[in-house]
Length: 156
Image (cartoon, one colour):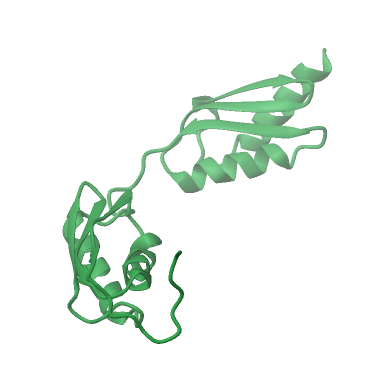
């Protein structure tokens, strides 16, 4: 029996635990590199299969090509994301209150409104950038003419 075949059998044995269905997982091995293919019922089981394969002595690396359905409740819907974004803008002190509006469509957030400083425009985007479910941001916030402050830098 070749080393790759022996390693493949050891990985398959490691994967044979409840609730994981090892029969639904294809395992191939080449030079100690294990590739997992197939479909598992959850992301947790996908990661568990990867850890189990990595725990087998002789496995140098694991390519986890298992498919797992994303639970419907993992990402917020557009109305939940819009609420979260509006709250984030309210709580983020660098964004003046009630100056930026939010529209969400398909996880894409569009920011509109007018602020007095460029830094406030950037702060609005930073306030929502890491919210769960944000697929992208279109920052259409405009900056009104800011009065010059003494000693401010001016380009030549």
